[in-house]
Image (tube, rainbow, N blue to C red; front, top):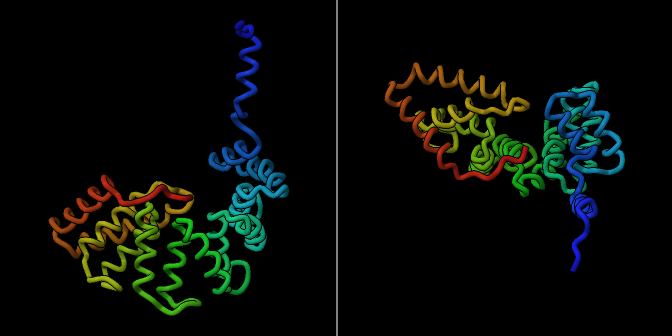
Length: 243
């Protein structure tokens, strides 16, 4: 059997390999780099064609006011298009907008619907948001146990807000026995967050909480809490974050 000549063989191999990049990849890359104008230009046509990932990211751009004027109504519109296709990130963001009332009055029933759908897919932002709904009794019966479980799920995926909230619960003994050493652990984890898009301010709050606990606890207790954080980071019972 004669093998094809080398140029023909290379052509056949190239044809069998999918394109390494395309408009969606380029749009997502622009978003990650903070090139907002390029992200909008690349993602909008795809979103208008029904691509759920492009719709979710375009919704996030409107939510943040990056490359476009901040417009929560537009953000919700794009998030809902993606959410209805099962996109967990969009579902979580839709839940946030409905719960916060950013695009109008709060709609806890709609927030509960989309947070629940996203949380079931492991979305950590939705888990935290749903936890607050249970903690505050927003559209559901107040349930500290359910809230704690949801905050823990988010925190165990590396969510700074989840870790900060758990730290606060342990600090004051809400839903859990008061344990300021355990609070140091969770505040330390929140303070070490590297997700600048969401968690920079939360990390700063966690550092302030740690400064307060430094004044309340002995150096040995603080060291114990920080060691717990290091141990947890070395062997975390967590899944891959979904941001």
